[in-house]
Image (tube, rainbow, N blue to C red; front, top):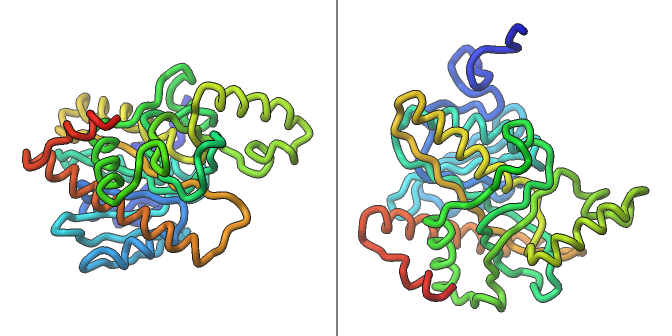
Length: 290
């Protein structure tokens, strides 16, 4: 069968990726991704020498520095369908860098456990792949786990800011889905009982919260890490996530403050990762806490 197109991703005639409209020189070793373009604006405000770019599809991205560390932030769009496209472009552009590439999803989520209060921080160890996009890359039996160096560094940043594990900071498995209003909102669906049973099962297994993009990160990481080896590159991808829990109805100005705090925590976590790789910081103390 004839290929639909050549190569990993679509590109413009100037070499830029088709959807994000960036190229290899825009890639940083530390990358933050978020579904909401507003979080990219917030990130831009927190970075030094930041520039904001808005491609024709509205997938906003920014790059700048935080405490001397180069940071790239991009809008993945809503849901795993859009995330699959943007994440592939980012990873394809990163392949030839021969560097450690860290990608962290910053987002909102809905708590599945009643003991988790709104505005809590969730840092996932692994993700339930309850969506169809990652199944296009590998069978559903394949696990989706986050990288310890990012997981521990984010916990360290949150604890430093006064968050308490088990009170307003929770660690464990999260859930990714590909629909919101008729799946999580199973009361709206004609087949909602099936959905409700599924959510109840995840709840009984201790899954903490549900969101819509994170499950792709480990799956794409593994694919591109192996591709890097096959092509003789030295690029290595690491992935992680950090979420806040929301409950409807929400106040818009309150959400903005929550998102800003979440992004600050992520940036401090990135500093921890950098210090760890440089041999200037140990993460052993966090292992003892969890």
